[in-house]
Image (cartoon, rainbow over all chains, first blue to last red):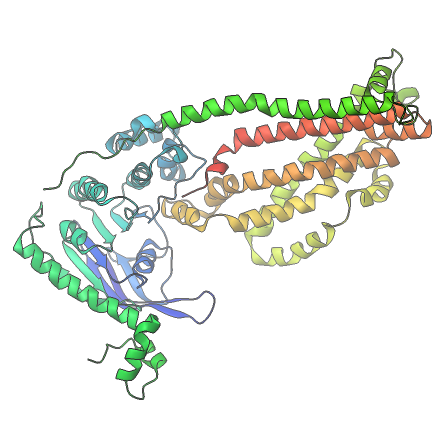
Length: 284
Length: 285
């Protein structure tokens, strides 16, 4: 079980600090696929990075089965937006990386690596190098590299956005659903797409515009395989899309000059910046 | 529901084969162009000499100084330090390489140590930045003082002339390592030292090697300068001997061999670079 309690995160960088995550709390259980959707730039990736242990929250606590998360661990496999393969290693070298770090000997490594490469369909490509692969193949290598460590949790950060929709859905179905069923994994999956979230997840977390907090947690009570044409599916879709739409508008209100004048005139006397900091809702 | 036909397996082998063919063709051209250029220079030089526009005793054409090279008693220097042209070239080459290799090893170690933490980097970096612009040949008096006249001094000069710049290059390369690759490694279970060994080191080597190539010329020139001024063997000494005895054939032979050796070695280094760090050209993602 993953548990996040009251996470806060601020982005530093150049200029004034920006509050990225504000009081984020949620729970994900074994065997659950949790989709995280939210307007772009809202802090979804940062939230995932905190769970991965790659970023430290300013405040708040995160637990895996009651043990606090203090740093990265191979039991929490991360699949990033882009594959980030090591360009100097072959496909096999990339996949066995985690096993090598663990100190497994060559034979054990190659047994496990070959098995997982057959699973993702890249066994014949094991001696190739990343630059020789297509985008989808690279992502499958990234996936194999994570799965070979037998993680209990998969943190997936829209890894397939560069692929076409068919491929994306195929890979989700083929690997994430199957892996979840096989090993009772927890999959946290960040996505832009409401329909993809609905096709695969048990639960959808809708995050607010920055700073990110959980706006609504929607349990998806539909059977697998899901039928995207059913009325229930459509109902969920409408609900989530509306929520997301509202948050998108808020982001634009805040950041686009096109909308700013609008907001200013609707908030008589209240300076825009203060309105922004509070992250309040638009006055209708 | 969804069509589950595998959309993968786009083979790029055909593309690669086509590329290889193009490479093979360009191999011929890689040699044809330099050969042609040299031929033009040579013929022009010879014709100018034969037309008596140039004084061939001061500025002999290639046909003349090359034939001088094949004379039986051709050798440079006197007494025990006497050697042939190839001996001289080898001596110069070994000095440059020894200095450069020691320089690379020390620079890599120093650069990585500096990158490890904040305080040593703040303490040591200014010193290195201070020492880096000192011309290699400026270390000669100190070298002679420390090691006397001989191979050690030449190696010392090359070392001093390259180690600081390579250290700065190493530090810069470490800073340039893709943060995402380190994150990937960390989340795959790599401990801190493992990240250094398996990610940072392979990631910086191509960039450092590029600096080695650039720096090789500095090392090569430093050795020649040292040979001209102090050490009485090698290609540099050969030119000085030519000057002292007013033997212009010797000077031009020396210059020719310096250029030829430098070119050969750089081509060799480029080849090593392509063989070892081929993946660099393909970018990362």
